[in-house]
Image (cartoon, rainbow, N blue to C red):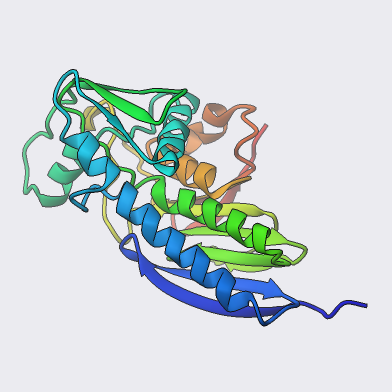
Length: 282
């Protein structure tokens, strides 16, 4: 009979947050190696995906002139392709090319945000990006942490981990293995506990960063009844993060109809007047 797995925990600062790995393994001699490889890869991902690092893939994409093409790392290409799929899946609500508008929101004391302009092409078959016309600024803040969790899960599976709970701050979580992990959905009136098992959970809200999420069709398209916080479960952390970002741009009453029968989202919880409620899906 094999020994029951024991969980060990590790932390690492990256992507402007603290990542936590809670790894279950019956072989304690290799868990430290698992965590080190995960965090080394996490640092690599940040060096490629962050637009705030001068020589990252994303920074170089944002510096392209019209007609120029840039070859990027395979990981960057995979993340960009996931973003293209998300743009289609969310009817354009999830858009990684609104970096100028995001920056305006962060630093501006008023005034209308700049209108979107320019165009880039992310090639589907080769890891390359072409700038058709300058003006678009790529920002992967709405997908990068979830993408990193999915990548680290694959590393842990390769090492033979029995399971794990992976966390990017408190807003993106990914669980796999035989165990379930209790996660609290906190609000003013109630804080239900969700058992997370072989799925991801992502939360978006206005409590910490304010109204930081940009609507691709401008402020006039923002709903009047803003959602204070939304939680989404999905098969991967990338999908959970995408959906939680996009759903913040809808009226609460429209969430279920918008998702429809898309099977890349499994559950939605919403903060309605300080109470966490479950949104029934089709």
